[in-house]
Structure formats: structure tokens, C-alpha cells
Image (cartoon, rainbow, N blue to C red; front, side, top):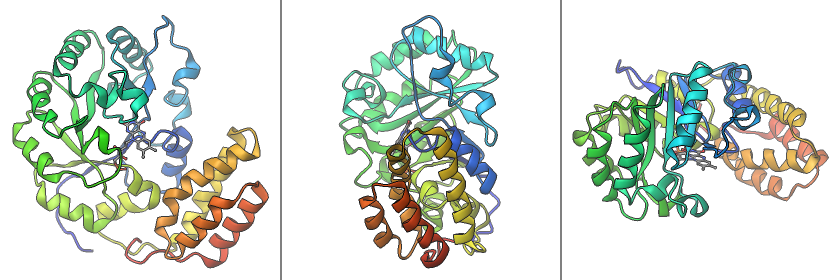
Length: 327
Ligand SMILES: Cc1cc2nc3c(=O)[nH]c(=O)nc-3n(C[C@H](O)[C@H](O)[C@H](O)COP(=O)(O)O)c2cc1C
């Protein structure tokens, strides 16, 4: 036990499209602990009048059995946003999240996601239009800018005007994508300027990185974690307890992996889809093993299900060494 502080922590699972879907979230809750809620990967606003259930399948309450979920919506069309938020309210959700951070050029070039950040006037007009008309509360997930970190300072006075449930800040610019350093100085400068609850997001990868952030940002109690949880699913439990030595981590990870694999085997049609999906997860999983890098090199070359099962099965049953200090 390293940390004896009693500050309440609210830990959310970050949305990672293609990874933290309902299938993953349900299995995560069945195997691990420590996450209070998840923001879903984004759903696009629709131009059609009726929301088709398949469009929101990942959010439907009957498909979610573990952690509470906040649906995330991406778009710049107020009518489409109001329509989806109303649908989610009818399904029992009390909060929806607006994605103001997606860096993908195809999204941002259409002034959606982080593409809206250089346009405070458009963000204000959007919020003025939707806030009085949505039956749910609104949380926002943002970056500090599209091109420049200073963009956030034009936005904070706007966000402060609304009763937002939460503002989640990932302190990178959109053009940085997911690389380069998180800008902790800019995040720190935002804190005294905000009148709404704030959450920090970005590069919480282990206990030590978290404690440094927690000590620096003493007023922050809400944290959103993505890749760190994908790599090490014990991480939220470790952040809460301060206890880094988890009993039988490989055996417990193997059970989770095997359930994930079987669930995708049922959901996906075709061997190559299943292999590709699992390869995607191993981009993150391998980091938790001392000998993970060599395994990941092998996995990248795999193109049949038989080979995947052979390589990963042997690794998890015989060779895997959990990285020390990671649980
Ligand atoms: C593959 C991938 C998919 C992502 N999908 C979404 C998404 O659907 N919505 C969103 O707001 N952020 C998305 N993100 C960003 C993450 O939610 C998070 O902000 C980012 O990864 C930084 O946090 P982390 O360092 O804890 O992972 C995605 C990131 C990655 C790498």
C-alpha cells in the first residue's frame, strides 16, 4: 500500500472505438473491478427521423450488464443531437457526452470532434440550441485545441455558461493525435478558470504516473483512462488500493482473454475478422508482459485462427511473465 489518502476517486473507462464496446465492457466488469462508469465510443448523429436500434446497439441497456454507460455523440447538427439525446433519455440515460476531441482528419475536416475547437462561435451556437432542448444532462470530452493549445482558453468561458455535468480534458491538440506529450501545464492553467466539474484524461498508464498527476492536480477527483486499462485491466483496482501486487495476474488475464476471444468468435463472422480484432487488442495487452514484445511480433504475422490459438494459448499457459510493478 503506497497511498493512504482518502480522496474519493471517480474512474471512468475512456471510449476507444473498436475496443471498449459493450462486449468488452461487460466482460471487463465480470473479471475486474475499479471502474465507476464508461463513456461509450462515439455514435454519429443521424439525418433520418427515426433512430434505428442497430445504430445504438452498443448502448442499449439490454446489451450492457456491467458498468453504467454514458452514451457519446459526435456531430455538429443540433437536431440530430437532440434526437439522439432524447432517444437515450427514453432508454433511461440521464447524461450524454458530446465528442469535441476526435482528431481523425475525416471527422475534424467536417468541423466535428476536434475540428470544432478553433470555432468557439459554432460551439456556442450549438450549445445554445441543444441545452434547452435535451432532456438529459450534457458532459463534454475535449482536447486543448485542434492546431494550437491556446484554443481551449477561448472555449472555457463558453463552457462555464452552461450547467455541464462534466468537462473531460485530454490535454493534447487534435493534430497531435495520440502521440507526443500531454500538456500538463495547459491543463493546470485551465483548472482555476473552470466553474464546472472537470476530469483529466491522458496517459495514465501505471500507479506512479497516476500518483504524480493526483499530487499535482489536487482539486481533480475524476479521471478517465483508456489505453492504460486496455494494457493492464487491473490498473483501476491498483489506482484505488495502491496495492500493486495482484495475485495470479497471468491466470486471471488468461480467463479474461479467453472469454473475450470466445465472445468475438460468436459475434464476428470469418476467421480473419476474429484474428484482426484480437491482434488489435494485443497492441495494448502485450505491454503488461515482460516478454510481451517478442510475442506481439509473432502475433502481428499470424493470419490464421489456428496459429493465433497456438501462439497465444502457449504464451498464456506457459511463457507469460507479468511485468513487475504492474500487478
Ligand atoms: C483506438 C482509439 C479509439 C478512440 N475512440 C474514441 C472515441 O470513440 N471517442 C472519444 O472521445 N475518444 C476516443 N479515443 C480517445 C480516448 O478516449 C482517450 O481520450 C485517449 O486515448 C487518451 O487517453 P488514454 O491515454 O487514457 O488512452 C480513442 C483513442 C484510441 C487510441
